[in-house]
Length: 364
Image (cartoon, rainbow, N blue to C red; front, side, top):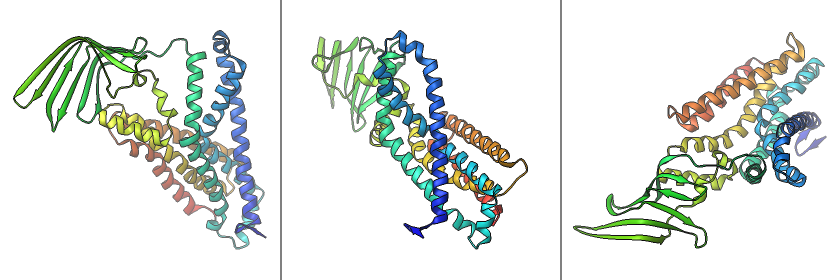
């Protein structure tokens, strides 16, 4: 009997794989919600957070984020858990003894891994960002004691091609930037420079008001100077850029993230490495599900001394090693020693090599 080209054995393994995976994810989510609520309950009560907002605005958006966060590692542990049980009940020996090759035996595992990887990719890039935006808004109102304060100094940005702005400091509470200047270049030549005491966002007209300004326009050999006490102007600078915490990229879908990267490149921002790491993780983590599936099947398909506990111990060790390598390589990328793409994909490359070695020596 076949269903979509899959045999009964394939359906059996897929059910075992996905059933174990979703059960383990549900279990860890339940534990995480209990611990998170016990940690934050005092803050919720202190800020008078409504029960409806806690459930629907926070935890309903917290659950998909946390479920996807370690989905690749729970895939690995799920594979090890139920494959070890099959190995110790001699099911795998029976399967291979009946002429099923180990490569063919892997097919239902990779069908299951594909389902989880596609699900994870869609969640990461299109569903979770919106959920994160609602969760962050809830935390800002009902959890954080202090509103976010922008603390950077000597702010340099390219807000349009050839247009650069500078501020000594910026206060996001009053939406005022101090010692503001703006330079415009044409073919690498300075054509205009504005200097002022401060710039303030006027929300009633959605424009910036510049105070005590001095504008110098340069046209070949001619120059003109304009001075004034106040002027309203529209520039490609949004005050919201200064009002968000560092986790703002987690609230962007893939299209918004790509647009944000283009803007950071135009601005020449030094923080672009962190955003590039986030983008590459959204592709690397779903792909790691296939690598860790191969690794899990290869290591747990034969009996070892220590039984299932030995396999699970190995799985936990590999999981922590993966996270540790990812953290180390990401820090190297943030420090500019390696590219963000290489930093994110290093764990996958290392574990792919390791998985292929174990596949070669797995029982056939």
